[in-house]
Length: 288
Length: 261
Image (cartoon, rainbow over all chains, first blue to last red; front, side):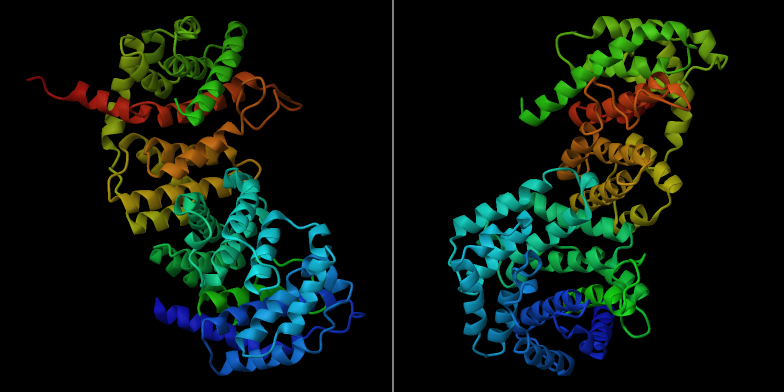
């Protein structure tokens, strides 16, 4: 299985490297600006996690250098970057910056200004996004939070998921994975550091069953996130991880890209990139 | 009594109240259409709800079922449902006769052992294969290590919850979760399965994802909602009772067939 994991991961990173220019945020006037900004933020987040775990390599180093170069070119205070979709963007960027030994205070200052203005409290965020934000504000030192406050936000985020998975929307399914990522600080903190172990029983089950649903329904993007959740929660799931990577390899194209959805969404100007970048990034992360 | 158990029993009582209203409609319909499902549903409610609140209706529904001669001559009665009823009404000769007719089929069902290959098979099998496996699980139970049993429970849960999100596949989803519940494979999967089943109950107590009548088929309550309600009640019964119904009739059948000392 290790050989399959390495192979999938290596080829995913190669695809990301080959398409790195497509991650560059274009000017705000460009119709694809928001989409590329979103992709850029996802790449910065994954690289930040990888760097914080002390992992490098030729391709990862090259991608990191590219992202760091772009970070200083972005205008972080545009209306787009103040919208709810990008509430965590400067915080994510600051984590990568700091992980690379650079002074991230200017990025934290941008987020701190939004906190001081009350702007982050007044935007509409789904509960799990609100938990992510609380976690990142605390993790970057922009706004302190207690274990109790984080646990309360976590409970609020879990409340909309108190229904059987048969009733889950796609948003609900991603809420599960993102809750784990924030709870576990992308694998750098045990979940029990925030909430009691007995409170995690259902979340662990949701990850295990949600991942299996992703296998049944052949959903490579959710499957990759589920694999990362399994690792971050410390679940003993060798069969599931093996089956997941087997499916990833089956769906991986000749360039190393993996489609985010097996049935692609509407064609965009840069269809191949937007149809593949997210799942490819998530599989690169899951394999690393 | 736990709140969860109390909530389920409230749903069972509501279902019994609705099944009770369906009893008079049997007089205008062919005996086979919904009669045996209605009887099983009311007998299950009578078994679960304390205080004999539904005993009279359960007896009345059983009384409307065909006699032994009609059953043995294939008079349209549901032999399988009669076999299930034998676990709850062991003194009724019709039901014991039906169980004997099924005993060879039950005895031939292979045992189910939880394992990684089986777990993988559950996630990839087509509906027919999985349905057959679920029948084996319901009647034979599952043996194996706890970790493998829990993994099998989660795999069945995943198949069921994935199917439930697709219009027209709720019946298959119910069949699969029922198997996981009946075999008591994983406590969390059982809780989620019960939550799923509960969500399909209407305010009037009936279960099933259709309205009472459709433009094409007219009143579908006897043909659709009664069997669906009874299937939901079987899932509740298998979760709450000391012994699941399928296992009970297999045990009774084996005892019936064992040589006398």
